Length: 270
Ligand code: ARG
Image (cartoon, rainbow, N blue to C red; front, side, top):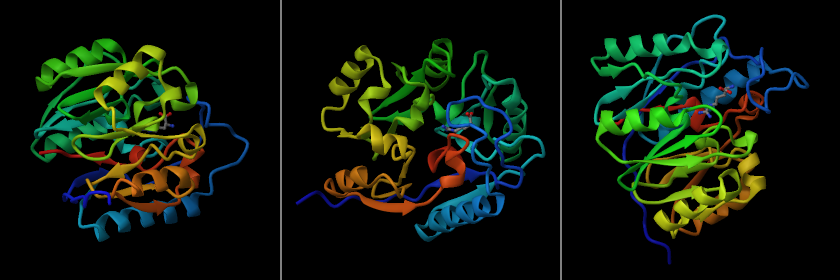
């Protein structure tokens, strides 16, 4: 019998998809083949937020800004730990103005915030787990930002090299199931980084490429309930076998921009 898992109440920051669209291409998912169905995107996002509230989490919103179609991806705006905010410096010029809007939100909410000196995309590339901060690089966040994050929080960062452009952010290839364990897709990482992950997390749940491409690893766990892409059925079974409870959701419109559950959600850890 798998262990009984315990949920913890979380505080999330999100940005309504008022201005969400695919208007430029900064990752392989952003093709103009199929236009975004704006009404469907809104419905899917509303369902996600209702799920969070039903699970007992607190959800706060930042005001969406016109002409920032990726601002809905709140995870990229910061890494928040111990009530301290390490902001973002976006790689793509199109997204750079987002950072200040989020910073102002955090300042108004009373947080100490740090403006990074190097390219870094918040929780897109940083995952706190097991006493470490797992840190992705290769496409967006630079290793120099990993050092800066380590100094700012005084927690060890573990640099992991992403090698497949479909998994351009760490949070498309790996997520924390709870404070100790992770699920990930090994093929998204360099051989050396795969070895690091095997050593640090010998009991990790391993995802197939298919489930990873379904954005199954762009999931959000509260330690028990795992809100995740409904198409990642193999991964759902894998985590259920470990005692976690998959909560499937359809975010197909956001996948057109290369985003999923986690991308839409910034966690505020206090
Ligand atoms: N279109 C956005 C980008 O490429 C998607 C961001 C997804 N966010 C994430 N945390 N993976 O920047």
